Length: 157
Image (cartoon, helix red, strand yellow):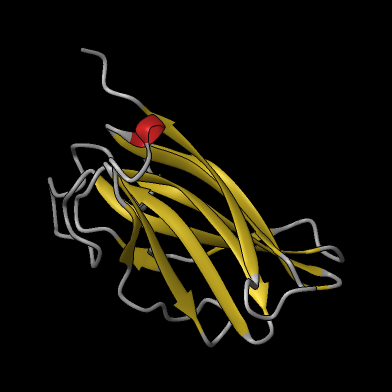
């Protein structure tokens, strides 16, 4: 069957929701034949969006959402990274060339519109592109609730 990740399911990020429940977020891409017969709910673009799968430690089955939980509307993207802080789930992801942030108040069922968090050129080593965020919570500091490590690419002249 056609899926929004029929061609690519990549860049997995795990987020423990409860002691026995793990959410797996991933980059989804579909093949070029996605709209040969009908248009799926998520559209015909190659880059579809962030997918989510749920795994319970008491089960051997992984339940994958049938549609992206966050659409990217055809933008080249990837590297979702997530953390929970209090009752808010934060996600960072790349939409080339920027790093975006979004958040959810309902455990990832709905997400805010992603906004640019870091753009190229803010440091010399991110002159061309920002990528591969690694997000982690820092529960000891309520004014800085998470930290992030990122990759950058400097333009070659």
